[in-house]
Length: 100
Length: 538
Image (cartoon, rainbow over all chains, first blue to last red; front, side):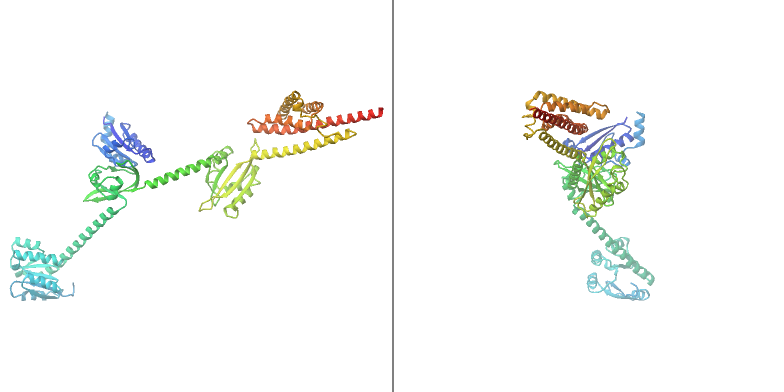
């Protein structure tokens, strides 16, 4: 199964952060059918991780797995654009998830 | 160029016969021409500097290697000047080189006729017009790009350009400053592909120095170096957000303060619409017949509420409305009114206070309703206590009159008549017993009132008065017993019961005092009769 591993970089507990997390969870639950692992990284608590990853703004979402690695930024409001940005192919990825 | 003379410069090595050319030109109806001749390309350049030349006709014999260079120079100097080559024959390679040096067209001499010449001239003019226009547009484009780049560079907002993979292709100085990274560290880095719902989105900048910066991000599709790209601008809104946050906190604090106040507070617009209320207002409304705040909540017109008022406060509603309007129109600074608002199970009184909203550009008033029931009760108790005290004074005076009546000779007032000391000191045990007795009586009286039973309170008070009279108790002893018991009774936390004790106690003490007066009246009459009979017997 191609389980999605997503890393969301955020800055503290702000309305922007809450909005991005809520948007992302909605997309994941609806489109990835729970077949995902979401890691939320607060750059205020883990500045070195942000530096290593060269994060310049938050929210930044990185698709770690499966390849190809993709990076998108923004409030993640637009589901279609999030999926496009993550290079999520509903035919391929959903079929994989169902066949697993 | 129609109807204007075309100045043609003919550059030929020899003084060959050019009448064929002049004849051909003369036959062109649409273009009157004037021909001038030179022998060298140097002379042609000089001529062009001094005279108007519209077309240069060059003999191919002049275009050796040096001649081609000279022609190229002329072409550069005289931008837009049509150059036509005249040849006996011409090799292809030389023709190409001539074209590269600026020649627009070439004509084979023996084939030249007016039509061909006319067409060649027109074609050369058109070609050069197009060329000139293209050069103009190209300059315009370059200028435009320069201005655009200048605009971006000078922009106070941070601007970056990313390619479809999210890699930074360009950044302006403001972006370097905002992101706290120099251009070398930014260009070529993966920034990320933006995904936002609207035109803008708020983003947190992650700076290496750890400083927290909030920015508003705006995205525009552009073409950058012939590639579809995104131009992302960042505006620092940190200060704005901090101000917003401070305002929110201040608003929350103000609201908390308002909600901490027991008074029911509402803000009214000029037309009477309720614009804001505190929690006490809503709580009172919910507990008093408006659970959904349909009739007294935000958005409802308070003038309508006043106009439709019914029940205990209906009589005061027109005055309230008048008072509110006076404050709204500035004819009064403040309006205050006490009014009843009784519940089915309790008596309630409120104070309504209307004041203009300070610092508002609009006409708005703040209305507060404060529960003053306790204050009203306290005032009533105070008035009753004062009436009691007055009644007691009257009773005492009556007692003194009786004493005087009962003695043939004047007797010293009060202390002489009653015990020398307060009962509490002269007979502490009896005083204590009387306290307990009075306490039981007041309880019984309360029960009698509530349960509608008869405990014969009056009889018991009469017995107690006799006991008091026997002990030579005075009005102040009665008051001391009464106040001691009531003090004990009213030290709880049940205001309604306290009120009942006060009311029953007031009646009881008056009745007891009345019986004591009667006792002493009988006693005084008895003594008088005794003195009279003693006098008679002696």
